[in-house]
Amino acid sequence: MAESELAQTLRDAASGDAGAWTRLVTAYSGRVFGLLVKQCGDRELAEELAQATFVKVVEKLTEAQTSGAPGAYEERGRFESWLFRIAMNKLRDEARRKKRQARTMDMSPGADREEGSSAMGSMAATAGAGGLGENPVELLSRGEQVQRMQACIETLPEADREVLYLRHTAGLSFAQIAETLEQPLGTVLARGHRALGKLKKMMIDDVA
Amino acid sequence: MNEFETNNLEMAKTDPQLDALLDEALAPEAAPAGLNDRIVAATVNRLPDDDARIQNPVLGHIGGGGFPWRSVAAVLLLGGVVGGLLWVGGETKRPGGIEDSDVATVETVQLGLDQLADAALQAESIDDDIALLSMQLSAVQEPGIWEQDALESLDTAIAFDEFDQLYDELDLYF
Image (tube, rainbow over all chains, first blue to last red; front, side, top):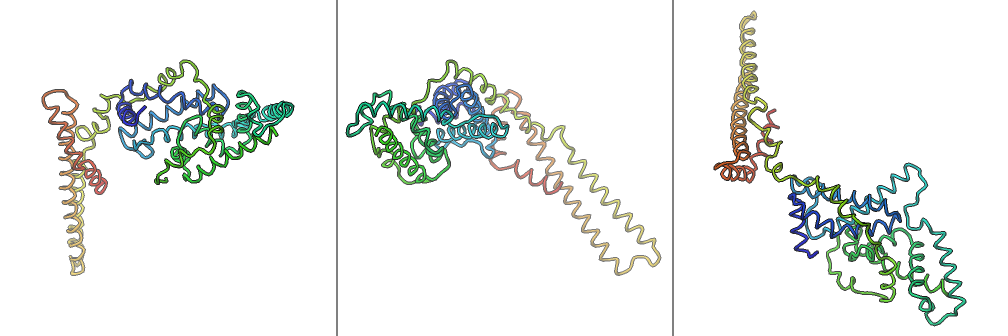
């Protein structure tokens, strides 16, 4: 959705235009759901959190329209950052709630880390048997490379993974990620580049 | 947040192959069928209703059948006057009558009475403001030839912060 169209749609939705609100949900629900399901690994929970995210969005939009209350949304061309920040906060709230309830539930994508690690080991063994070229990763099929990459991502610290998910799953720019995570841009850039470096090294080391 | 130009940093891809692989590995899963409909169904009733916003129920309660500010002010003034008279009466009947030292006290009472009178006038003025705004609000809520005028009056009242001033005055005196 273009910036000017988004601004108008937001105004219309805040004024009570159900059509505009539906367009907004249609434009963003997929990305919000995609980000949430990548992070929590549970499609039902991701849908629940996506719904909670949009409930919060509509509340804040309405507050901005009727009262300008603190915390109400103020359109300054940063809707996406704001939207994904709400989604991330919902995810964190849920993780905290689960933790408080002392349920055995790992919210991190590394929940199946053991399985992923063994998969990585298996792939490394396969690759080793096939011999190594200058860039051994290229000897793997594309599907294997993707699987390996997913397994490597799961081993990264959560903060690094967040940046990667927001960048590659939600499709945000580094500036938007900085706003979403409420962190300095330099920190986010450094974290992103560090994560890429680690991934590259892991990919090659595992095969070699 | 940082405001400097970041385009160069955004575009600087250290390894296009790695980026492409990451895009593929982190591609979002397809959303479940009907997700949009379910989200819209759960949220659409939270959108503001146009009619409800124009006929704001909170503003509608101001004035009219609201709190009787004028009556309260009158009671306060009457109480002050009666109290002052009783005090002066008591003093004059006291052995020795009113002495020089009591003059200052009488003056203080007089000052208090003046302040009460001012407060009463102020309250009456506030009461009138409330009545005026109430009329404007009532006119806004009733369709007819006055609707546009009433809306403009209300806009003017809002533009000149009349509601805020009114609140400050009420807060100060009551």
